[in-house]
Image 1 (cartoon, rainbow, N blue to C red):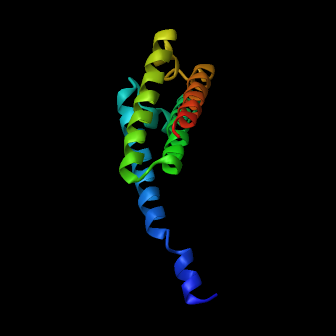
Image 2: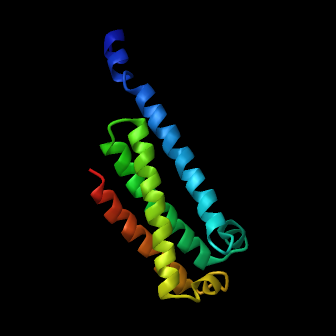
Length: 137
Protein backbone atom coordinates (compact mmCIF):
# COMPACT_ATOMS: atom_id res chain seq x y z
CA UNK A 1 0.00 0.00 0.00
CA UNK A 2 1.42 3.34 -0.98
CA UNK A 3 1.70 6.18 1.53
CA UNK A 4 -0.92 8.20 -0.33
CA UNK A 5 -3.38 5.29 -0.10
CA UNK A 6 -2.78 5.13 3.66
CA UNK A 7 -3.27 8.87 4.09
CA UNK A 8 -6.54 8.67 2.16
CA UNK A 9 -7.67 5.80 4.36
CA UNK A 10 -6.92 7.81 7.50
CA UNK A 11 -8.28 11.12 6.20
CA UNK A 12 -11.50 10.67 8.17
CA UNK A 13 -9.77 9.70 11.42
CA UNK A 14 -10.08 13.13 13.02
CA UNK A 15 -13.79 13.28 12.21
CA UNK A 16 -14.26 9.76 13.54
CA UNK A 17 -12.42 10.53 16.77
CA UNK A 18 -14.27 13.79 17.39
CA UNK A 19 -17.69 12.17 16.83
CA UNK A 20 -16.83 8.97 18.72
CA UNK A 21 -15.35 10.70 21.77
CA UNK A 22 -18.23 13.17 21.87
CA UNK A 23 -20.78 10.34 21.61
CA UNK A 24 -19.11 8.41 24.44
CA UNK A 25 -19.01 11.53 26.62
CA UNK A 26 -22.68 12.25 25.84
CA UNK A 27 -23.60 8.66 26.73
CA UNK A 28 -21.72 8.97 30.02
CA UNK A 29 -23.41 12.31 30.81
CA UNK A 30 -26.80 10.82 29.94
CA UNK A 31 -26.17 7.84 32.24
CA UNK A 32 -25.14 10.07 35.17
CA UNK A 33 -28.02 12.52 34.74
CA UNK A 34 -30.62 9.79 34.17
CA UNK A 35 -29.41 8.10 37.36
CA UNK A 36 -29.90 11.39 39.24
CA UNK A 37 -33.31 12.16 37.69
CA UNK A 38 -34.91 8.86 38.62
CA UNK A 39 -35.99 8.68 42.26
CA UNK A 40 -33.84 5.57 42.78
CA UNK A 41 -30.15 5.10 42.07
CA UNK A 42 -29.71 2.62 39.21
CA UNK A 43 -25.96 2.28 39.71
CA UNK A 44 -26.42 1.35 43.37
CA UNK A 45 -29.28 -1.04 42.64
CA UNK A 46 -27.38 -2.74 39.82
CA UNK A 47 -24.30 -3.16 42.01
CA UNK A 48 -26.58 -4.85 44.56
CA UNK A 49 -27.77 -7.30 41.89
CA UNK A 50 -31.14 -5.75 41.09
CA UNK A 51 -32.17 -7.20 37.72
CA UNK A 52 -35.15 -4.88 37.27
CA UNK A 53 -32.90 -1.84 37.59
CA UNK A 54 -30.37 -3.36 35.16
CA UNK A 55 -33.10 -4.01 32.55
CA UNK A 56 -34.61 -0.57 32.99
CA UNK A 57 -31.29 1.28 32.92
CA UNK A 58 -29.85 -0.67 29.98
CA UNK A 59 -33.04 0.02 28.03
CA UNK A 60 -32.71 3.73 28.76
CA UNK A 61 -29.05 3.66 27.67
CA UNK A 62 -29.95 1.85 24.45
CA UNK A 63 -32.90 4.19 23.97
CA UNK A 64 -30.42 7.06 24.03
CA UNK A 65 -27.57 5.36 22.14
CA UNK A 66 -29.64 4.30 19.11
CA UNK A 67 -30.83 7.82 18.21
CA UNK A 68 -27.41 9.18 19.16
CA UNK A 69 -25.93 6.85 16.53
CA UNK A 70 -28.54 8.10 14.07
CA UNK A 71 -27.54 11.67 14.91
CA UNK A 72 -23.91 10.81 14.18
CA UNK A 73 -24.93 9.42 10.79
CA UNK A 74 -27.34 12.17 9.78
CA UNK A 75 -25.96 15.30 11.40
CA UNK A 76 -24.31 18.05 9.43
CA UNK A 77 -21.51 18.33 11.98
CA UNK A 78 -20.52 17.90 15.58
CA UNK A 79 -22.71 20.71 16.93
CA UNK A 80 -25.72 19.36 15.03
CA UNK A 81 -25.06 15.93 16.57
CA UNK A 82 -24.97 17.46 20.06
CA UNK A 83 -28.27 19.28 19.47
CA UNK A 84 -29.95 16.02 18.39
CA UNK A 85 -28.43 14.26 21.41
CA UNK A 86 -30.04 16.86 23.67
CA UNK A 87 -33.41 16.29 21.98
CA UNK A 88 -32.96 12.54 22.38
CA UNK A 89 -32.16 13.00 26.06
CA UNK A 90 -35.38 14.97 26.60
CA UNK A 91 -37.38 12.28 24.77
CA UNK A 92 -35.94 9.59 27.05
CA UNK A 93 -36.79 11.61 30.16
CA UNK A 94 -40.33 12.13 28.87
CA UNK A 95 -40.59 8.38 28.30
CA UNK A 96 -39.74 7.78 31.96
CA UNK A 97 -42.23 10.44 33.08
CA UNK A 98 -45.04 8.92 30.96
CA UNK A 99 -44.34 5.40 32.21
CA UNK A 100 -44.30 6.75 35.77
CA UNK A 101 -47.77 8.23 35.16
CA UNK A 102 -49.07 4.93 33.73
CA UNK A 103 -47.45 2.87 36.50
CA UNK A 104 -47.14 5.18 39.52
CA UNK A 105 -45.72 2.34 41.62
CA UNK A 106 -42.80 1.80 39.22
CA UNK A 107 -40.55 3.96 41.38
CA UNK A 108 -41.04 1.41 44.17
CA UNK A 109 -41.32 -1.66 41.90
CA UNK A 110 -37.87 -1.34 40.31
CA UNK A 111 -36.01 -0.98 43.63
CA UNK A 112 -38.10 -3.95 44.83
CA UNK A 113 -36.66 -5.90 41.86
CA UNK A 114 -39.97 -6.50 40.10
CA UNK A 115 -38.31 -7.67 36.92
CA UNK A 116 -41.38 -7.36 34.70
CA UNK A 117 -41.57 -3.61 35.41
CA UNK A 118 -37.86 -3.18 34.71
CA UNK A 119 -38.14 -5.08 31.44
CA UNK A 120 -41.21 -3.08 30.44
CA UNK A 121 -39.55 0.28 31.14
CA UNK A 122 -36.33 -0.82 29.44
CA UNK A 123 -38.03 -2.07 26.29
CA UNK A 124 -40.32 0.94 26.09
CA UNK A 125 -37.26 3.20 26.34
CA UNK A 126 -35.61 1.24 23.54
CA UNK A 127 -38.76 1.33 21.37
CA UNK A 128 -39.03 5.10 21.80
CA UNK A 129 -35.31 5.41 21.05
CA UNK A 130 -35.71 3.45 17.81
CA UNK A 131 -38.61 5.66 16.73
CA UNK A 132 -36.61 8.73 17.73
CA UNK A 133 -33.67 7.50 15.65
CA UNK A 134 -35.89 6.97 12.64
CA UNK A 135 -37.11 10.56 12.87
CA UNK A 136 -33.56 11.96 12.81
CA UNK A 137 -32.78 12.18 9.15
